[in-house]
Length: 399
Image 1 (tube, rainbow, N blue to C red):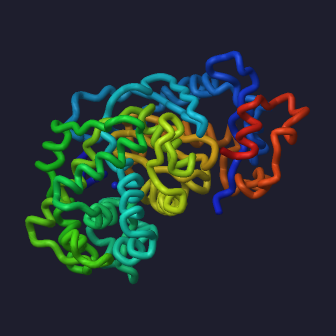
Image 2 (cartoon, rainbow, N blue to C red):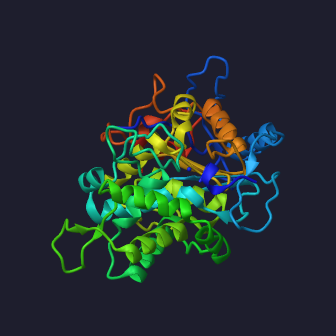
Image 3 (cartoon, rainbow, N blue to C red):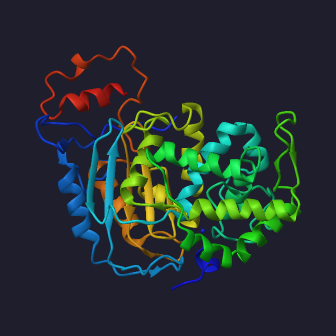
């Protein structure tokens, strides 16, 4: 076990998935061209077979430790993967239905709600979006940097983000957070009181981060609901505690890899849940959420992650990782062993493998035309493509 303070941390659109056999429940999905000469992607890839292959290839990795979250005992061998397409197909393998605390993977979705409340410019001013280059729970990130602002994907920035959420009172603010998560997930995302009680009992680090933000005028809450737009004020000690409590509640919600894959697919689908059809976030805000995930989604491992995998992503110290292929699908992996940066060892390895197999890096040369760039495209452009089914043709055009 490790302590919470030791761990407590236009995109180029790709053609990946398509259906080659409409009669099957989980149909084969064509791979995009791979940029890797050593591991070329096959002409087609069956999603179920690929997910199973990823489990087999990486199940025996034993590095890392299990984060102490106050949840029920965790088996280090647990390993699950889920993938959800922007047209709502769901694929799972392994322990994809097993429940665990969402932890820091809550941050992109809270940031999305804050963007909806205030817009990008306000959040750039009050939270920031640059990578800190330090561990996600760093107490000195503001004091050692010329620009004091944080990033909504690390703990200090996530606290500052949670402080900006609008509402009549604390209960209303928390209700709005829960409702936002439910829209992304397509169902209620339950709170684990067991995990929350543990987090509150060990909240000294979060309170210290809040105090550090207060020192630099980076921790303010919206004024009364009847105040002018853009009005913020410094909270009293009770108000600070309420924000910290709301933040820790958000990280104590229970999810599965399947749930997270739906949430990631909602981001991939421009903010509309592909399973329920409900809009969770306006399209103009989604790109800002994904940008923040690129800069700091895997904490101080984000640079290496993006160089190797090339996808917006977010990890949580419970051992989960989500990745977004914009316009195509969302994918989530759960495996509780995490590295010193707080990232799932098997999760990172499996998603790196998937990116290489299917050529997913969004900056790879020769990537397909972005969705929307060719509005004159018609389904007829897919004629003669033996490797593509009807679904793939729709993906070529975009939603």
